[in-house]
Length: 95
Image 1: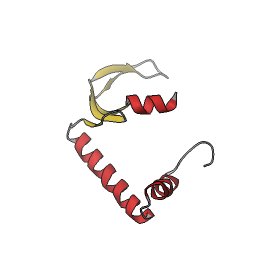
Image 2: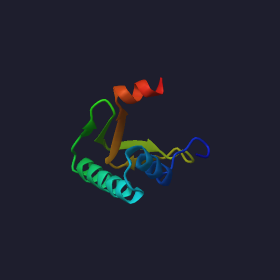
Image 3: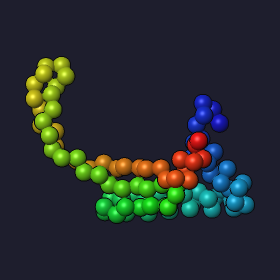
Image 4: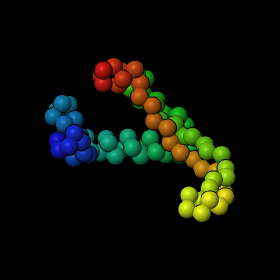
């Protein structure tokens, strides 16, 4: 692990070693997990793994901002975002 970052390849290898599954199997499960997660959150479904993580869609209202260079007001359209929250077990692991 360089620079305290665990990339996808390293994550797949670590999960495969921990679970005794092949890296190909773990990679397939991760692909399915992220596909399911993204399609559900895109539909407005809140996805939660109790104690670990919650992922949900958020809405940002339209608003007026300012161009920082000119100070001119600009209209910022309404948009959607994603909120990811750590659960109690994940928070406890970090302490």
